[in-house]
Length: 206
Image (tube, rainbow, N blue to C red; front, side, top):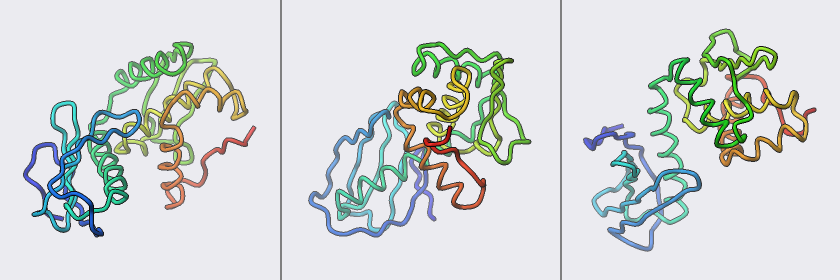
């Protein structure tokens, strides 16, 4: 795929689209729980979609003829692509502890306080694990390079296990506080379906 010269670019992706209502339009697009996204339509852009960061905004460039439904789908695709690129700048173990503490404050009222959080390379059948008695959390290295919201979900998942063992109703009620739980689970389930991991716990498991 050809690279767009814009800074912070996620890269161009070929797009097949139908007719769209507005040409040359620039309008804000704000998915839940993300920074502002601005969609820019262009008559000159025929087959590609690209995205890049501009300050605290994300700019998504699409063909003018693209429908609103296709626009919404491609914005999601490009946000995931950008997030995955940025996640490749892997957090060190110390930064993971700080991130976990921030997520605990934000979604679990600060009740889960891990003593350690680290990457491990020996977890090939689990995304993460924890030992409540030690307050330790381990994340599989397979998460490295995945979108930030996916890594955050796994961190919140393991933080919740410091408070509630197992996958019963009380556990899943805690996970409801994280607004991107379903999207993150969908992403991981897609990876599981592709054969990278054999299993993801379901909300019905005790």
